[in-house]
Length: 307
Ligand code: MTE
Image (cartoon, rainbow, N blue to C red; front, side):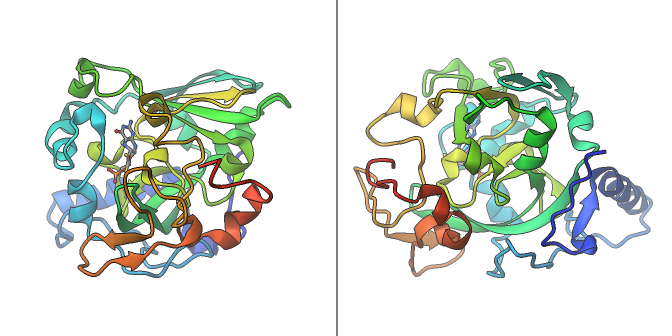
């Protein structure tokens, strides 16, 4: 069994995925029968306000904003496009190919990947390179859980991710706005950091398509573009992979993309951010406020060069 309980979370903050699914099915059925009062479509988990070691207790952004103001170029380049267009994405059945430097390469059905994991709830700050930010109550499990299960070899120094390639259902892939499929990468120690999540839901609901259903990455100390959506492939690699935004513009986007108020994007400052739903700008924090957990990963590195 691969039930991984986070040592910093109490039992009631961790839900086995199958239990979570059964509970959702029960709630849906009861709601369908009119036996549960409507929660505005949002099924709140038992511990929606649980604050684990990794959660911020800042006010979460509204579900409406999180699901309406999106970046998902496979469905258009405007923030409002994904909500309007992402319904065409087919997320069930879903499988993830695991390949490269690991012992357990293969194609895994999503259900099989999720069955042995425990879903946790974590409120993370999410900071976009364009200067806006949100606080998102994610549901998910540490990427480290999946990595350990796949038994990477000693040659595996990086993890590479790919979004589904399906131009029939992803209209943006019929344009040349990016080099498809969308790709991302993390260094192995970044991928193994307990903050790094594979997310399956938001606000106690399964992810909506526009937010990257059925499985997306969340790396809270990096700019939002590292959080690749609708993951269909994971590859363990010896060499550093190249991500989609680097391919699009090497001088503007780097591999690390850590939130850093002192390193500007070539065309704009990264010192301040506007929290969606607020008017006044806030000062951006180094590593998006997660220095305590991640600064040691970059000891001795020049973060201006390794941007
Ligand atoms: N993943 C894919 N496959 N395609 C994309 O265009 N956009 C990225 C990232 N993941 C993107 C993606 C960017 S630029 C951001 S800021 C976040 O997703 C936005 O996530 P959200 O829309 O759920 O807020």
